[in-house]
Image (tube, rainbow, N blue to C red; front, side):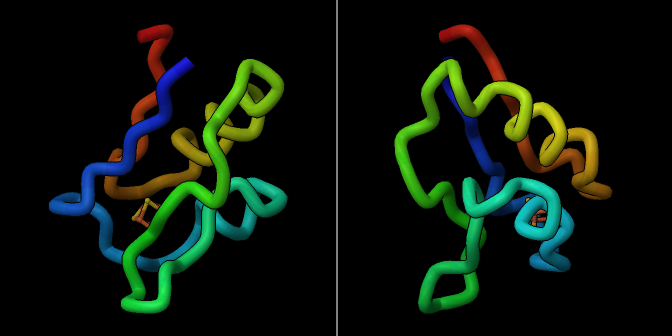
Length: 63
Ligand code: SF4
């Protein structure tokens, strides 16, 4: 599974962080990042985060 954050779309409101139980967070420079390599176990949280993102900045794929 691959989780991507398009930083050109992210507006840093943090909805993904609020719903993902630690899978996403702000980096020290305020960029939204994954806190760990996403595994298959993270798929439900990653999909929830993607669905919560008003900017459609998060993508989840099988790549
Ligand atoms: S919800 Fe989307 S726009 Fe908001 S911080 Fe997360 S990736 Fe960025």
